[in-house]
Length: 207
Figure (cartoon, rainbow, N blue to C red):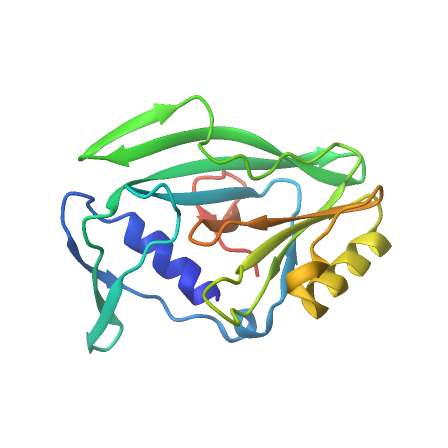
């Protein structure tokens, strides 16, 4: 699943004007294959890439080929208009964290335009939910989701909701007074990143 996220981000960062792109897909670390969730930590950020399609949907249907090695040629078709990249900061919230919008920009027709707010509100989380994690799911069908956002007042409630979602994705993602669960729409790539150094010049996926 994370391999698909990296492919989506790399694909969407290519030149939009072309219909055919060659994308180099990085190898997925072994520990990513077994990971089912990741807890967000203060000081991290989230990079969210949303495809802009004529249909208004987010699922980008592409036809990949593998000429050789890790080089993948992807044809996106006429539905693809561009993409939005939004950044969110993960900041302290008592003993936990909260997600704060930082910036967004749209790349379309070869132009990069800043936006005042993201086109899709993904992280409207009340401050009382201090513990936040991204739960990764394996796709069982084309209608399934790849990722859920789970938040809770306490770590125990976070674990309970995570177990519920993983056990029954079709109905387990629900909310109550102690925890909430929201699906990330299919096709939107959410990538947590942490500073590579104290200078925050570069960002890398957390391990």
